[in-house]
Each structure stands twice: as structure tokens, then as C-alpha cells.
Image (cartoon, rainbow, N blue to C red; front, side, top):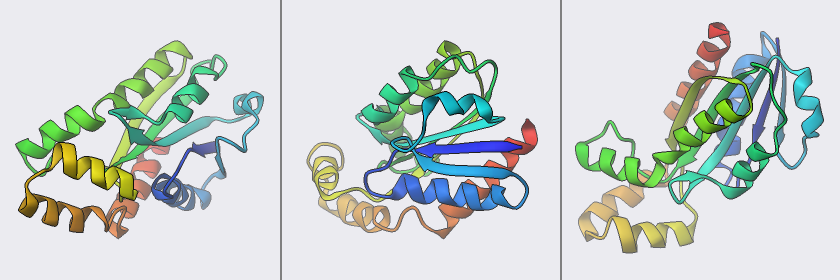
Length: 182
């Protein structure tokens, strides 16, 4: 199978996840990994599966990825896999973190679903994991979302470790499952 993994990144979190997915699939498939800045959009139709990844900004995918997705041609039922990194805590940790995730990252899934519908492709799955935040984002999170000093101290310490080895392994396993599902 010929797979294209495209990503947009600012802090290298999403690139790290894209690379892990590519490594997992490379042994069994022909995989091209590149930034959305490097791809010729008309070449996408040459692939059997498309992975798209981006960071989460303001509760949805980064604007550059959203614009890229809007400019995609009709994809004729091409299997699509989405992935994104975010600075919110994982929703399964607690109800509090689920609420924060839904508010601050919840529309990323919707962006992939909308693209699948608009571009006539088949969204087969979406992966997300926490990624370390750049300093201005940390300031924003601390001033607007996690204002309690003790909670912030623990959150910041955890945030700066991602994506960690566990996240990377989960991304690899996810990528393999998605391709097996095709």
C-alpha cells in the first residue's frame, strides 16, 4: 500500500508523532512522510491512504492545516486518518480534564469529519496525544485555564514530557490498526 503522511508542526510535537507512524508502517508499506509545505497537492491521488496531522489551536486544528484541507481536491473515497497534538490533559484522566479537553481540543475531530464529508473521503480514525506547549501557550493555559498554582505546577511538569515514549508507541500501534482496517 502507498501511504502519504502529511503534517503541519510548529513545536515538533506533531512531526514526532508523524515520524513514529511512518516508522511503524515503513516495514510493510511504501510510506512518504512530509510537511504540508513540501507536498504537491495534485500528487495525493497517487496514494492509497492519507494521514493528516496538526497541532490543536483554539479548540480546532491549526489554521494552516485547515486551509490545506479546504484546498484538497475531491479524494474519491480515499481512506483518511487524522491525528493531532494538544496541550490539554488527556480526557480520560478525570471529569475535570475531560471538560477542558472538550472545550480546548474538542473541535479537532470535527475538522477531520468535515473534511472527510466535503472531500469525499473515508475517515477511518483519529489519534490525539498531549504535546508540550511553546512558552506563550503555557502562559495562556496558566492565565486562562489552569489558574490554581498547585494544579498548574503538576500540570506543567507533566505537559513538558509529551509526546513521550508511551504516546509514540500508541501512535505506532494506532497507525498499524488503521492500515489493517483498510
